[in-house]
Image 1 (cartoon, rainbow over the protein chains, first blue to last red):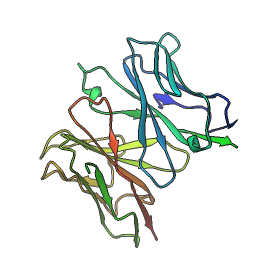
Image 2 (cartoon, rainbow over the protein chains, first blue to last red):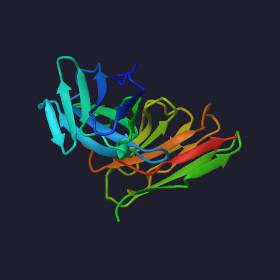
Image 3 (tube, rainbow over the protein chains, first blue to last red):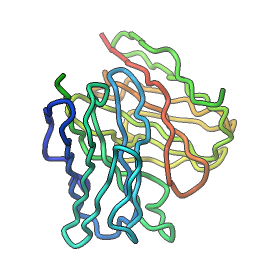
Length: 116
Length: 113
């Protein structure tokens, strides 16, 4: 049973427009969420994270929104650039007080293509 | 430069052979992880280790084995018991027991012929 789901395998946007990548989770114990970016044949690189005590975190062109009641988070990229074309994974972690804080649970990824 | 190295980048083996994938980190991180990525799927956890000489099974440990004899090294052996070994394997590390961020190596593409 997938606890972290990215239901859109792919997304295409025009350069300069907003990219919105979505992620849903089922485990209400998750309290920390991350987004990773991955280019082909490379390891993922950390992009941005958010704790469950917040509903928004911003870093430059990247903003992550968390809706705990809906168990949904989204990554907004504004403006999108061709270099943003990659696979984006969301990941979640359980509370520090539990053993589940020692690992991340990843979604299946969304391939973002930014068209020039 | 601190980081995680995985070698080799590409690895080919015949069916029925065991193969060991290397993962080394010089970040002084306590925790290390092995993931497998298949097309259209997320990263699935194979094994992880919080400290030297200790490791835990992840979601898909069958057919794999690991060791953690040194803090900086966490090799993964893909045994002949693994039914579908062809995949992209990623090693990661994090500074402490609870994960705020994981740092990934460049990966090894294993192809079993």
